[in-house]
Image (cartoon, rainbow over all chains, first blue to last red):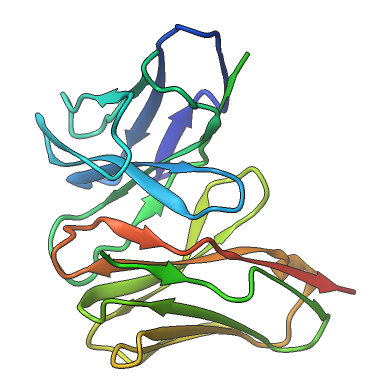
Length: 114
Length: 113
């Protein structure tokens, strides 16, 4: 099955702790994205990557870090600098270029600070 | 900066009625507009993508239109069913955004039997 796999589904973080969310895709897409969703709000872009070993900050990158060492993988680390990390995190991928860059999403990771 | 708005935030209709969901955007220079469905606690499922050169797209009971000049897209769902209950989000990809999407907050739909 082609698609995007996010793990874990639920994640609990203690104050001052870094946690890493996994995102893997087998769609052979060059571009990958991380979005954050808060209740009643649209998705907001955290980081994106259009090619291996390169990534760019989105609208709300503070307190987050990413890496893109493999085309298939784009892990997101939520650092202790992120003051309000409780949210639903969604990973997406698409082809690079104009036109039909349909985005496909994973099932999300719900992060809760305890 | 692109702003995407979806009104209303919530909608309830009886089964069998047609659904009309609205999406407006401020910058008409878009590459495409995508409609998604989200079930509670789940990820997004892509429903339809309309490229900037298209006026509409259809898939089964779903039809989406795009009017760039007025900054509007509309998703029509014919003969609604209880299984259509979900949150529907639209997202615009700008002309310089390289795949990045600007999302509306969504319309939560309930279809009552």
